[in-house]
Image (cartoon, rainbow over all chains, first blue to last red; front, top):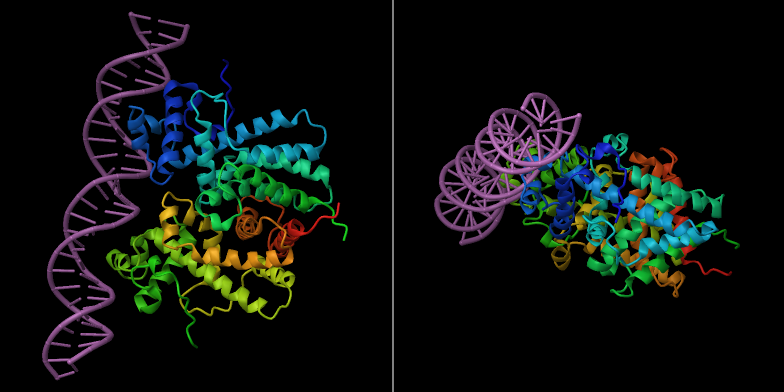
Length: 227
Length: 227
DNA sequence: CGGTTAAGATAGTGTTACTATCAAAAAAGA
DNA sequence: TCTTTTTTGATAGTAACACTATCTTAACCG
């Protein structure tokens, strides 16, 4: 099977982890450990032990653990955009594309593990729980100048285009799309940990409810209202 | 001037900082320092130096810096709910109440400093930048059991009631309200740091645009659609 | 075979997030 | 006022964390 690789912003890493065996083990163990420990408790030392390597070796790939998180999240956005492209390219109307997009965003993840060294379900949980920490920092502006949020922006732009095609007069396409992307994650987190802040039921019905909620918000917002 | 105090969940602190002079200096300096340094770079040591006290003394008030952040955010929610009550109590219809609520949420903050030791504008910036970190942790469930997110939940419930009054058939009142509360913060952050993820303009027009965006999303979502 | 590059091994540094102890000062109670 | 309790300050110490540096070995490349 041919390995599917993503071209990620080279500022995210010092050495490209996709190209070496140690690099892949770093990614693999990071996903597993951040998922189980949470980003705060995760350290390069613990991860190095997990893969029988050393802290020093890990630092040759990533400047620090924040960059590593940025890398994982960038990878996630690329992967999501790849799947969205896959499922929308055959669709004709922007309305259908947007709908398909929401379905993918809200879907319960049961993946064909197309990537040998990435546990996509664990990565999905990481994004739900840690996404906001990638940009809610004091270095957000310099990180942004380096283009480290390119994956998020690119996706936001693409979906925004469809919103504009559906209703060219709608004044907040990017605000609505970034809200859509974040809300998809936050509501999953609330459903799991703070259920009184949401109306999503427990699994297995959670994901269809999330899809309906997001559809309701997005399509009603951009619809012309005939009062 | 009578000091207006909030009754906050006692699990948030070890000693109530509102009741002592040192406690008030701790709160005051924390708001200032978290605002300028960001929560990650903020330490009890730096703060203790700022107020010419010691780390040990600070630890007598707060178990750790995460609890301190929870405290500040809880204070913020109480303060917001207080102001929402103030401006909505005279209004008759739930529609007007919800509208007023969105106006307050989106308002540019220029405050009468009714609280001697809290810089409300700095606290507002802190909530925008650090709110999500209060619950995006591995201890979220135990923190929740202690009731540390009570302020958020209480506000969400109150606003949710109005949503239900406007449209009793709407199935996602709490999901919509939590989205409203978070989105108000996130879009402000994006407008400041990642403008391509939003459509809000620079100040001074940012806040009216945010208000319109939020109104659009909320009222269109809960409106009955006559297709 | 020689030269480059990647990885492992080890050590060290300054900082963070605490915990512990003891004494001084301030407040409260009798 | 004297005494007791409570609060604060001062100081010290610890384990873990986030790196940085250096040196050696192993692998690979022409």
